[in-house]
Length: 294
Image (cartoon, rainbow, N blue to C red):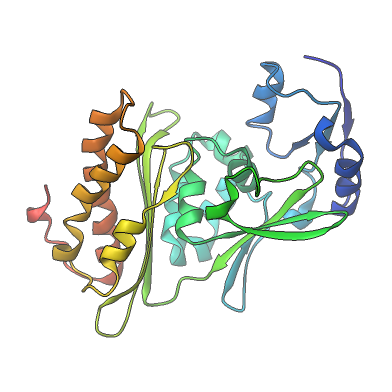
């Protein structure tokens, strides 16, 4: 490991000043679960570590005028222990408590998971299904990017920027969310395939909004427009949801047609889909008719 400078700024402004000074030669340290490994394996060449782990202004979970705001230094344990998240945003709670070991959940930060963009990043799929927005700050200003648009060369975080918030509309009383993963290695529960859902309905139990995201299949999670369009305007019921399993299997086929894992994931996604849509029905208090599940 090469030698580098280390700085632990006391404020966000100090951190932004350092990032502006070092640019591509700086690395931001938050929880350290990804960066420390990268440094040891020489995957990250840096002249300065900017340790933001003590910036308490970046660790919060707040609900403000119908908007849920999460600070990037919030840990997965913070999400798991939040009464609001547990009671109102089931998808984030499920993503948090199933992620890694207790040590990883204690150390790993929301910001690190979103920005480092691991293929197996549980929170990305859950946050994307909530149509979340990322807020970046630099000495030159503020920038917002929809999470669904973030994973492109044009929208990625710049070397002088810091992620300062992720926010999304608070799910209403006519909304339901869920996140279901297929994992391996029980000690770490590494995701093999994940599915995030947000559905809204009107007073007649008709779907008025559908946000469906599949993760750990392609390089980044993907919004599944075909299923979202299929669900809109239809009655919220198992009869409506049942075909989604086969539809998702076809999506997997399109995303990884030559991957060795294709046969496994094409079948596995059906079970994940059934579980996820059962959770939605359960949240709405509707009979899932489990005897009809495939």
